[in-house]
Image 1 (cartoon, one colour):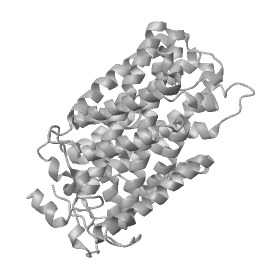
Image 2 (cartoon, rainbow, N blue to C red; image 1 turned 90 degrees about the vertical axis):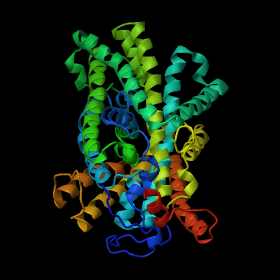
Image 3 (cartoon, rainbow, N blue to C red; image 1 turned 180 degrees about the vertical axis):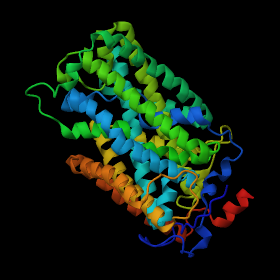
Image 4 (cartoon, rainbow, N blue to C red; image 1 turned 60 degrees about the vertical axis):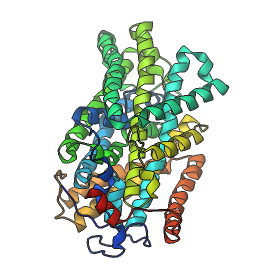
Length: 484
């Protein structure tokens, strides 16, 4: 299936509101979504089960990291958050991703969507924002894994040993990604099953000890609600559903498999968060301040013993590995897609001779991830959430604009709502996005503001490089020749 799109490339001034179906200028940079997959047609494609677990790790990877929601607002609000938030955020984002990924099945993902809706400036900006938010998550995931390791080996609690563990782990996991997406996909299946098993056991063992009235607790008296921590915890644990769109070119029959995989992953993720939370809050009573990331391991010891605590700690490390690999894969293939679409220099699309993976994207993503690993876990998550929120507002706008301006475009999967329903579908999560941005701290505003300004400046810098022929960019003729 070939889907015709008309991208202006990166050589034009930004035009938001221009109908891309009528734009004919700068045709040498008008690339199709299949351009992002031209170099991958001979590669082994992802099938349904590995894709489900890659999406699962893009978003969650298990209930590790949900504990601060209880610390921030008490058991009742934490349970309600993980019960309601998927309906106002996860499901709408998954529906939009299913429609647009099947309509534009290329590795550019949301970059293609914004480009088609509003033009190349907005496509480039969205790509930059999403890439930065994803890269910011890489050190957060490694830090989360190290936080569990330090429970067994206290030497990694602080100082040089901790920083070395973060850096070396990042490099090792990046090399695993370098070995290929098919390996990452099947590894995600194994990691997902092994990391979920201890939580299934803990939930079952806890059943006789559960007292349902504990679920209704608003928290300890005298403990002030931390709504910033609460919102960021929910958001960080249940976002990034659209990240898998950048892997569409690596999926076998994406028009058929993508919707199935997304809906299966949504169900798996929500249940993986909710059941352990219900089990622990209903059976364990401790000081609310103890509900930090990693508390589930301590709760497992209280419920079943040291053996289950150790298993959850091992599972946390495995989960962090899966999260890291899925997040890195999304960013890497996004960069390759942007290069094949003419937004980035051609060398970003180069693949390894041994493993046929985009090694330049892996190198860039890993370097940036290590560079921001000095930030605190909370600042990393909050900055990633802020930049991601800005990108999602643009993504929702692109979705609505494409529905309005290109109603007859072939959509193998289509969200079964008319325009008023689609507006409501996007408005509710958009309100939450604005809330997440409004409650950010000063350091988050500073870091995020610099990244947004940098993303805008990067677009014009790429224009300059292209006009002066300082770097080589893909053209339509080259892409068509490669496809032929």
